[in-house]
Length: 170
Image (cartoon, rainbow, N blue to C red; front, side, top):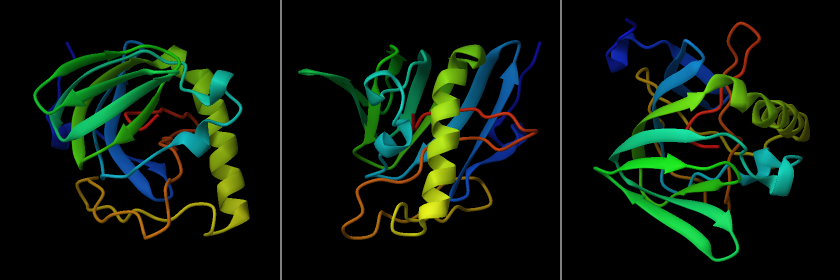
């Protein structure tokens, strides 16, 4: 039976400016992830149906507050101490610095990951005006806030062994 503490999960570089602790266990990606208030991965989901993440996510929000936007008037707020299920076709915004334990079927992520990979590369080619860095600590937790005028960052993608894993910030 796989099990791990936060520090035992591999620290993976998600994008050049973001990292998280996550791994695949039997087709399910388990992650302990943190995101700063204001983080928004919307631009990295361009090219997906309706520009939204197409994966299911189950999790528990340890700290913070997030909003899951399904489009139209349907938005759900998750607060620290709540378990959640996020359906495909969503965007996530971080209203407060947040940390979560999350489980996502790895195979469902491929469509999202292909778009994120493409958009991350395009953002790197476009230069710093497309995305601003989020400094990370050794523990993989982002620190700092988006610079004034910046509304979004590159999305969460794991560059490990040529595979890509999207986490909470999808």
